Image 1 (cartoon, rainbow, N blue to C red):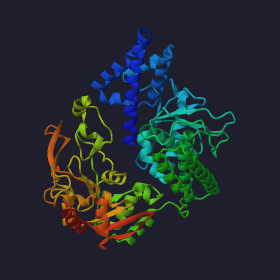
Image 2 (tube, helix red, strand yellow):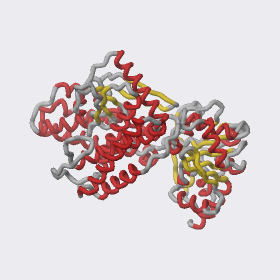
Image 3 (spheres, rainbow, N blue to C red):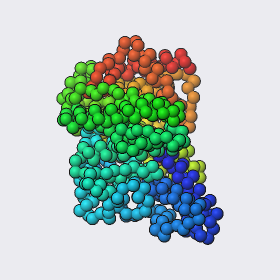
Image 4 (cartoon, rainbow, N blue to C red):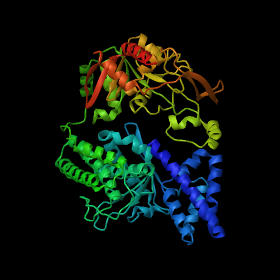
Length: 579
């Protein structure tokens, strides 16, 4: 999602420049729009965060494209558009849309209900609004119920959706009262839908339209099909034939629909079985049509082939969501013991449905470890880095002219409150538990919960990410184990300790924001080992071949349990031989 968002920023900057050039050619007739380009430049200098919010406004893309087209045709800009541009230039990313918030198991979805303003007609349905207070509360209640369904039964959609969706456009139902929904090709970050009382169907609607948004943003970066040919193809879900691009959009969205009903099979019911069978068949048919069309580019062939393989996977046997006791039994069966100190890397999605979500997973781990055991997680914050490196640490590239302003505005790392970044939901759940402690490194911290927590997390040297003066070395000394819960060796942090023990490893500069003696943000710059996880998957296979790894399943997740010290010893020898 960070990569797609970065692509949208680049696309919109190009569109702003195109509007500026079109306005220059029109001269005084486009005076109102001529101020957009310099106004956005000024906003970016004064307030980069406000500039970013404006540039990612879901209808900026549509508004820019329409304005350029109108200017090129020599027509007049609508007065409402000019008012909208003025609001944007003032740093307001749109009208005063009501904000609704849904939260479940610590996962939050917050969206604006876009009930007024131009360009929402891009969704192609009758718009609802302006909303009354009662109607807004009705929407919040419905979204909260749908969000609970997604968090507890479809958790793999939750973080991407929360990171992307900022706006929901209320629609009126169809003439016959049926629900309608839409995602507009030039409205990244927004979906449109009519209100639905059934939380499962509203959750499904969000997934369906969100996948349209995803694919549209992907194809802005990487075309998957050739330019339109005029040929139309049968789409199993609608009566009218569709061009290859539209069929591809429908195929991907309905892959998500099939996946949704596949997961719903776990809670039973004839509806889930019927819907799964229907949409699986439609998606397979559409994928085969696309692969036979000759209109896909090589990347598109790979994309649709992978989708075809995914949708053909048979569903797992229907099972209810896992409980704490069931997960605890699986963890014990894998070999986790009472009193262990264990460093956990986890994918909640891989576990399958879990009653209570991530908090139940933490409870199950603590139940097995018992009061004498210590649970440890890696709570990295690589986003606390110099803006010149954000293409590596945040997944977005920032123009050099903004670096100085961003450096001056960044917050200092605070072990007690700074959220971790890019490591899934389990480390954050452990970090926020009462009694949890966290190490002080501003980019590579660990959190621990249990009697050894203080010993593991204290005195983490600020110029040593994952070496001898980090919690990894202490974990090695206390005989800790590593649990890979549904993830691969590529995220096995313990291997990084071995990098420090291979002679001649290069050192590179790092920079981050910390608090000074007066608790003011200040930049801290240091040299440390250049960390490289790219060989870890191969390294892990080599270690596993020694027979030192216990394998098994926890929920639906394939898991590995290993001794940290043995893994580091093997990694040191393996990496040293390839240095």
